[in-house]
Amino acid sequence: MSVPVRSITFVGGKGGVGKTTIAAALAVASADAGRRTLLVSTDPAHSTSDILESALGPEPTAVTERLDAMEIDPRREADAYIADVKARIRDVASPRMLKEVEREVDIARASPGAEEAALFDRFARIIPRAGEDWERVVFDTAPTGHTLRLLGLPEAMEGWMSGLVARRRKLRSLGRMWRNVAGAAAGERRDGSDPVLEALERRQARFRVAREIVTDPDRAGFLFVVIPERLPILETRRAVDTLGRYGIPVTGLVVNRVLPERADGAFLARRREREAEYLARIRDQLGGLPRWTVPLRDTDVVGLDALRGLLAELAP
Amino acid sequence: MSGWSTIRRKLKAAAEIYEGVAMAPYRSAIRRRYARQRDAFLLATFSEALGVPNPAEFYTLELMPYLMEELHEWHQRVGMDHPPEGGWRCC
Image (cartoon, rainbow over all chains, first blue to last red; front, top):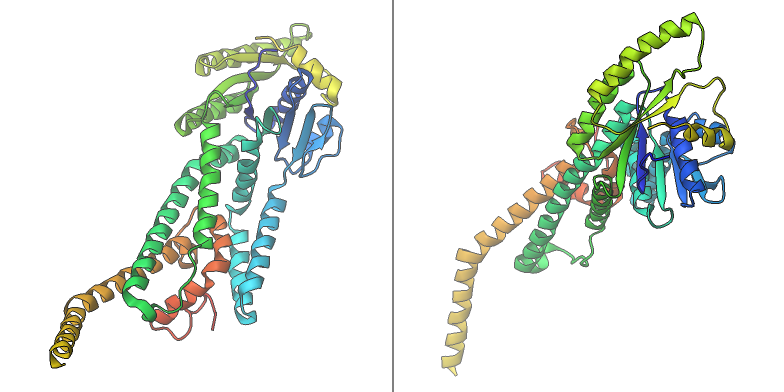
């Protein structure tokens, strides 16, 4: 197996192309090769639990001696964050104010970006642990569009947070100036620490570290899974371009479910002719990427042994 | 006796003139700048409440417990007895 697995590997592609299976197979192979590996899934349908035949949860669970796996549920992450914010508001708000502020928080929770933001926050906390708690972390990402938005977040968020941090710093120095010239009129003096600035800087640092790691070709890479069909090829082509704009290195392409030579019958022979056109299209449109082929199988890929068998057949 | 007190009186008068001519405008300029910056920060942080999209809205929620006091200062400073309808209600 020579599929490049960096310390951070994102596995992505259009829905239904076999991302979860390929990601699990890569993680198992990495662990079998002696590397401490973490497999992270964001699929709330628990497909990774099914494939690995083990009950996974939101925290890393040992699957083999060197393989841990976890399933992050974006909804649960967002709810946990909101609960934490509400608890801290309860500490400082008057009862009258509490209801109003909690209403605002609930509106924000219902906004379309909330779960994505919560998921990204979780990613951003896992990413720096690659190379420390695990030698390798494999992310089985959500379908393409969602993942691209997620990977585009570090840049957008870092910019936004930097703006807020700069404003807050300026505000703090103006506050000092104001207290210097106004004396007693400025009211009671607050101590030097500013929890708002500290919280903003913590966020900014977390996003910056995540972006530095995912754009570093020595540390991170995005592996696409595609099947020889029209729409997955189109979508992957666009996604490769988008990742290029974000500066996220794309390490290769796994062409999944290719009809094997031994598949017989007139029906499959005709199907293979169609497939040849799509394989040509993949070479044409995605030819710049290293490519591996995984043949279609006559059985389901479930369990560690099946996953090991899958990669054994990988042909460059 | 009167020499020193005259000098002191004149120095005090000079200080008051300086205060009126130089310091007071300076002080009110600083106060205005400080107030404007506080408003700008609150706006950038809670723009979503005014219908202006904030890509980081979810992450700025955690600032709310610390900023409620500043929001209260804001609505009092801009001359509203109560915070605007539909927004916060701290008093």
